[in-house]
Length: 246
Length: 256
Image (cartoon, rainbow over all chains, first blue to last red; front, side):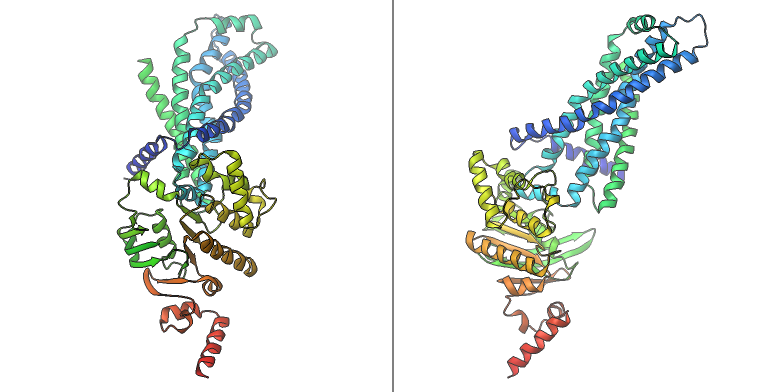
């Protein structure tokens, strides 16, 4: 019953969010601010994590290749496909659920408990739309870019780590990156990042928007937002993989 | 004028408001008083539309809130200004942006017109040289005054204040009370103030509605409140030793 109630309330909130904005210029201004806050400000962490993960994947692939006959360009190929198919879409989304999701939940939760949302409602502003729509649009818009940046940085991470540790030379690694490239993998992952981007921005927004209580509750709801979003990301990863690879 | 008729409101089966009716007059400061948990905040939130009522009617100059559609309700809300207990200023916006916010959202005014209006509102509440400060940089009294400036930015017909004096020192409380009273008279608006501050009751209480355990316990004005025989109201009004002494003095004066 509790879960059904939340699902119903979540969809009702979505209806409220996607109502026609009161003033487009104000929403556009908010959108630009959110693109900066949620998207551009995440580039740094995405790049750092991806460079390290690219390097780690490269080393793991090398040390776990038990067959000596296997060509070393496989390291570049494996790194590329791992980044495209799972790391830069799913794993990175799980990390962003922590960074962006908790930020959204705590921001809206604080606004709720300090009556800022009530204050907007009384003015006649559709608070759900004004506060949440720009976040969803901004983050869904930025998600594919973050994915591309992540893949690029991950490949660079492999390119730095592989030759430095002596497991693969630059030319072989690049050959691996170019070998049997399947464009569908990229489309598939971009679809995933769009779905995950929507989840990362809307689920914490829902939890923060309806929070009740005080500061303690805001902290609790931020944690809940990260946990719930992460579970949903993994669930939809499973569903989308099954649907799109069938 | 706001008229409420037989308002009923329950939360999870517990009746918080029981058949409350009254009239809040235009151009006067109408006070809702009562102990904590008596239902006065719920009543205020029902009137402004933050809570849906379970029964009864709320009429804003004859317009029934319940029979309005989404758009009409939105328009009505633009006629309402509200000052929340802690100000409820938007943390991410400066004082200037906070006061300009309703103008940005609902008017087609030019930037110069908006700046003129916001400067007028800020001057009206005696806030100077603070346009670019954030709410976190303001004192409690200043925050309340900025909230009042924002509430009057769109020339509201109805002004609601939820415990405007809470957390303020007595001097600032009186300043805020007088400011609200002046604005009410100046703009000829219907003002409803939710309070349990007896200073406010005596200072600005044109009409007073006493709520006790969700029911209308008493109705009158500040000059009648000392002579009432309502036991619950007397227990509320004369709760402090200071007010008890005041009552004794007044009784002695009356006896003489």
